[in-house]
Image: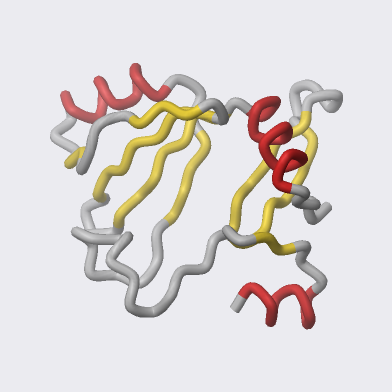
Length: 122
């Protein structure tokens, strides 16, 4: 799948998919990144959702958002995971779609990409 998108649409792919680089609207000197990651058709990664996709949203303050979502009765499927390049947690929407929330550290994310030898799609 990654190879098809690289060949036919020019995406600069890596082992995880492709990274799209963009500039933040509030400060055009700051970069932002969006990750596109195709999974095999038999993946279990999206469970407990029965759907064959997952949406990832960038958020500003993951802990505060998770606290609010809990108060609102939203299903949180795991604990917040912390990595150098950001914090992650998964929730379920009302239609059973798994959603990944990501509070990014774009500076560390870009550094990791460079260390992996990955290029971004701009």
